[in-house]
Image (tube, rainbow over all chains, first blue to last red; front, side, top):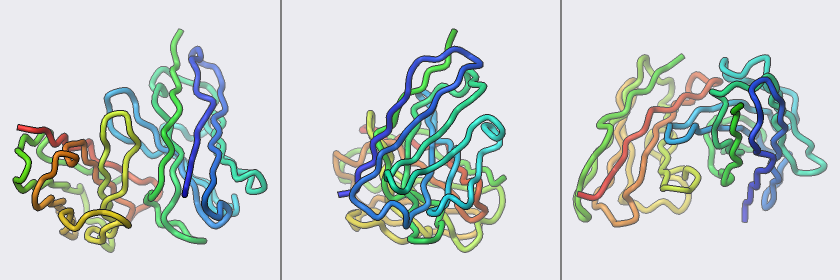
Length: 122
Length: 109
């Protein structure tokens, strides 16, 4: 059974930093591109970032480019999101999501975690 | 960036009725790279449809997707009580970035 479990969400002040983690199990982690998708309270979904199966390619939404860094450790079946210079508009539930494609990026998501809540507030 | 507009914002129907949800793109979505997701309160989204019309694993056949170019539709042929939720479309033809529609809330009438 595929499982994605996010952690690391807390309340942080504007300008602060945070690192989110996603622990994956139930599939061959290093065969899949992984994504972060966020959802502000009561709002819709916003794709944030992706990293290819080998970590060789990363992409970011314009709203987080230059502030967030995605990474992965395939030896630990883990995905990360380093978030710097946080803004109030970054407040959201952050989901880790698995790409559908095997050793390719299809850019849609067949499994999601339950999310971790990041609140940016003074 | 392709902008997706979903309509209606809220759809009120009764169990057993047919639901038709629309997703319109600001420019053509290449190769019908469009997905639909269902999200229930307090839960993560669930993939329903990809490639505009292919059902994901385990999705009942009352869910169907259609469309191409800029106009796409999710149809639920006969609503079950568990189908009342928020539905999002997502284009991935010009990725990254992926973009989502703003969602349609399907509520019980």
